[in-house]
Image (cartoon, rainbow, N blue to C red; front, side, top):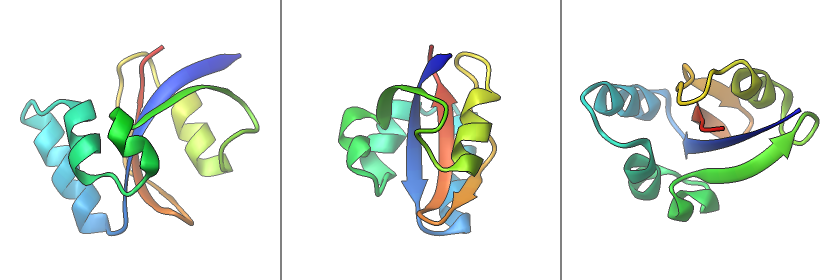
Length: 89
C-alpha cells in the first residue's frame, strides 16, 4: 500500500502548536508548509509524493498511514523535529 502525503517540519514544539492553531483558523496546509517548513519539501507545499511502508522513520510512517485522506496528524516528533502530516491520497 502506498499513500501520498505532505508535511510541515519545524524545530520547536511551540512552533508546531502555533501551526495547529493557524490550521484550525482556516489556513491552507500548503501555504503554511511554504512559509514555515524547515524541510526542502516546503517549497512544494510540503509535498512528499507517494511512498510505501519502510520509507520514512517509524513514528512518522505510523502517523501518516493512520490518517484518512485530507486529515492532518497531531504533532509527531522525530529526530528531525516536529511534523504535522496531511495525507492527501
